[in-house]
Image (cartoon, rainbow over all chains, first blue to last red):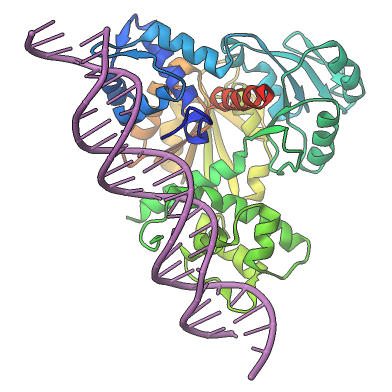
Length: 212
Length: 212
DNA sequence: TAGATTGTTAATCGATTAACAATC
DNA sequence: TAGATTGTTAATCGATTAACAATC
């Protein structure tokens, strides 16, 4: 696979999982690991592991394997979580509030800098020391704060207009929790979390397996 | 592609998206659509659409295309959302509570029948008319209620033991919101929602695109 | 009938796995 | 040096796209 130029999405989607396993190994005090040993733990082929890592250059050493700490730190850099990344949450409903309180992000270097809503009952309340601001403040806020990512947690019918507004104000990465698909300029990166879709896939697989 | 025997996961993962688009067409009062027209809307190839549908039998008609309502109803049956499906939520923390209050599931026929936790401050509180029960009640509850799916929303370190318990009590489909991977018997279907992984993938793509 | 569009086969593309020479 | 394991090339597999005969 010639991935030195453009890393295939299939590989990119596996990176966080490697990163998690490496993190666990590091915590367990394991200093080196071969692609074969890792393949047994992760239930993938050793071949795939070596191919994947080699998209980013040779991190291993013949006859030795991979140094866990080194590889972990390389993955950290590749994934961009070696620096703090700033995120805002748009929509402080069920999902937005859950994200605001979710403490796993901080471990990964993600910082929630702001939360926005339009509901007057919600604006002004506090979530984890962060005061929910009105959407009208978003423009000024983005001028004064370097934000990488916006998590969209607004109701279905507002999704499109809010997405457009956020993009207009310069956001280039959107984490979309709405079932609605976003139709945005090519240079805006979107990652969707379609919960209902995911649940239906689970249901399909479950029904399929119970047929047998 | 010979998918009449075993439908490839790649196809299954696309089904909810088709279902959503068909639902939108239906609401818009559109009665028929060709694979070509649908391909323009969905930004996939017409060939893929026809291939995908044909894994489940011929739903179209030469020279005419597909009847929207018929296709929608077929997809509904294929996905298993033509009947009510019952779900429990294990762990009434941030994510668990957000799921309990998320009203999109009901539209898809999913019903939250029970919510469980071990924290005495949370047990007994109500979420959407459902009283949070103690995990000790789970066994009895599952005896008296037909449950299809368990959504696991427990803290990282409890994930493994709770998953084992749930499986021991007969659950065969787990919707896992923990970052921890589950190691369960083959006949248990797991669908993971690794939020941090997803966020890292978004970050990677964003950083990649901003390099250019 | 003529036109349109499916269902399906064949061709292409990309991703995964296997194999092994390079080398620590 | 001998053994182990990588990095990388080649082989295989599966998924996507193209093409077109069947047919409404």
